[in-house]
Picture 1 (cartoon, one colour):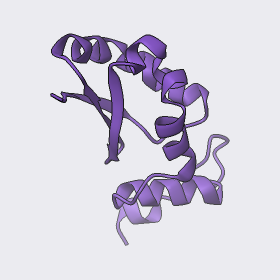
Picture 2 (cartoon, rainbow, N blue to C red):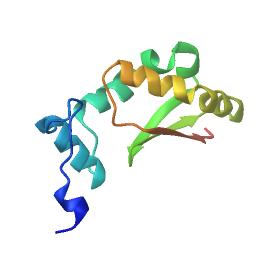
Picture 3 (cartoon, one colour):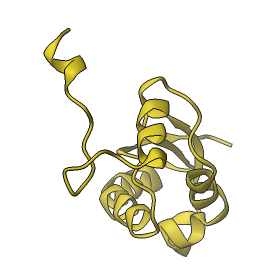
Length: 110
């Protein structure tokens, strides 16, 4: 048996992961769809997550492989979104989501 296979994932206290944490890890590794909680945070609470001004020019498009892809209506807003990416990730974590690891920004022309 390989070393990696013998190692078991550990929770924050060094014990086994809780079932919900383990399932989320497995789903993210196989590219499964994000949790309902993540979907709610990103798509229904976007103004709260991104801030009203940024949210009026930048919208979430999809969640893909631990990345949140957002579309901006102008290159200037895409730049602002890239500058705000760490703050958006921090806000998501504060609201209880840790599955999104990075933000990718694209310009969407209307």
